[in-house]
Image (cartoon, rainbow, N blue to C red; front, side, top):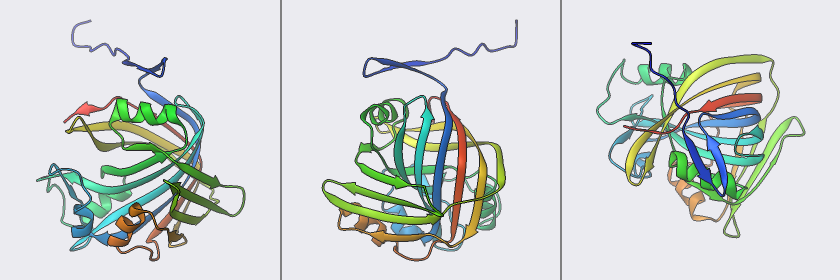
Length: 249
């Protein structure tokens, strides 16, 4: 019919298996903490000039660390740690300074850029790097969600990167929300649109404890002022999502 665009799923061959977009997350749980960090230090960890740190206060941006247990996912059953900044494309000054960025973050309208994304399975690592340009690596990740606090230990190259402890539990629902994250594929900026929802959501001020190890990535986090109290902690007891293919910006 004229005026309608037919959606054609996009397939990728990863380790002999076909992955079809969108990639569906049917069940996961996550513990996420957010910190205020120095924009200048955060900017030094961005890989290119196309993005800038979205400041919520003068000279301050937001760092997010998430520990995720993907229990039912098109890419498998695996653990993941995401270290990301909230960003904007350079030159995008829409909205009120500082207040606009903070409000966009709370409403899920502020994009992210992931600087580290370790997982503990090789298939999802290759898929993430190939399809979306995510900086996935295969590392040791122990994520225990059995008690009243979620505890995550990330080891890399025989050294500890971090240990994180965050409260679990929550009774709120998080309705499906459209989000996006930026990444680089062959040095070119791409955008990945995705949607996410959750049940058993708990949001708290502070609450997360973090210890940093001896690995160089831990030193990157020290350059941002960590370890220090988190600004906010969030628990999602049952998370669902849908990731589209990356789009060139």
